[in-house]
Amino acid sequence: MRLKNSRKRLLVLEDGTTFEGEGFGADLPVVGEIVFTTSMTGYQETITDQSFNGQIITFTYPMVGNYGVNRDDYESIAPSCKGIVVKEHARLASNWRLQMTLDDFLKRKGITGISGIDTRALTRKIRQHGTMKASIVDASLGFDKAYTNLQATVLPTNQVAQVSTTKPYPSPGTGNNVVVIDFGLKHSIMRELSKRNCNLTVLPYNTTAEDILDLAPDGVMLTNGPGNPTSLPEAIDMIRKIQGKIPIFGICLGHQLFALANGAETYKMSFGHRGLNHPVREIATGKIDFTSQNHGYAVAKNSIDPEKLLITHVEINDGTIEGLRHRRYPAFSVQYHPDAAPGPHDAVHLFDDFLDMMAARKEQH
Image 1 (cartoon, rainbow, N blue to C red):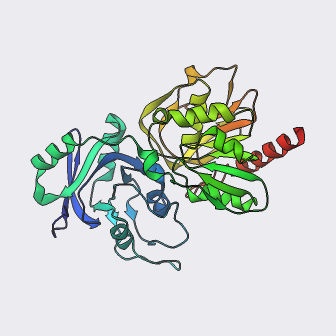
Image 2: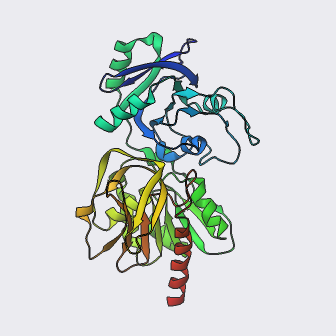
Image 3: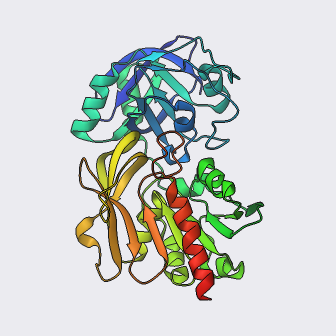
């Protein structure tokens, strides 16, 4: 079913709140979890981040689309967010790297957009009541029909299976052999490892520990990805079996899975962390990094076994856990994105720490 030619669209929330706006992007009715991001730039990277799988992204920055879309800023080739919500959609774009407008890009990728929305009111609603189901439909459908369809829709829980690679593939280099477990990886993670000459082998999310160990890697990267980490028991089991044998670095969902593998628990946040301005403190040094974040789940502080895991970083605004290190094994993780893309590069040194960890492991053996 396609939306009709009318440009008027409705954004309908699970609690019955409705906004009317102008349509752009794909002509498709969509249902997803509505979230917001406070990023002031980098909308192409945001839209193509697979951690937004199945979600409708609200941009709090008032104008989106003014520099278009280019060939260099993709974080995935086939983005899987459902839709985007903006205050003002810039129909004309200007940038020396411009390839196409945001409208054209969304049409090509099958992503529905709605503009003219009071995004401040919408964001307040999400902050007060948490993320919820929402739909974007043609205004001619009417509220009653749209709301009935929304209530009847059950959101999928197999998001990682939807975005992970189904077959292994290489990204050749001449340095450390690093296995990258793809839970919905951003290209920027591979880019940072490639800058450091790593020889990368990207594997599906459900790869077994035995298959990983057969490759004899120098290190394993657990990437970001969408959804609830507890829905990936096979990945949790894999991490338990390889830790202590291979250095591990986890990012975002990879951080949560690393925590679960070591007996901690996770919980769904009310509205999550999504944006480029999250201050994180390193406990040991007091150093503060501003970080890029995109997650709806967090590690429960009181569930961490201090005999296994050391809390290394915390979020300054709400005190949530942002970093962990294993007490006995060469393994660490962070909740935020040291690869940025978009966002500040304050924490990019963590990739160098990963290389140092691999080097130290080699010296011991």
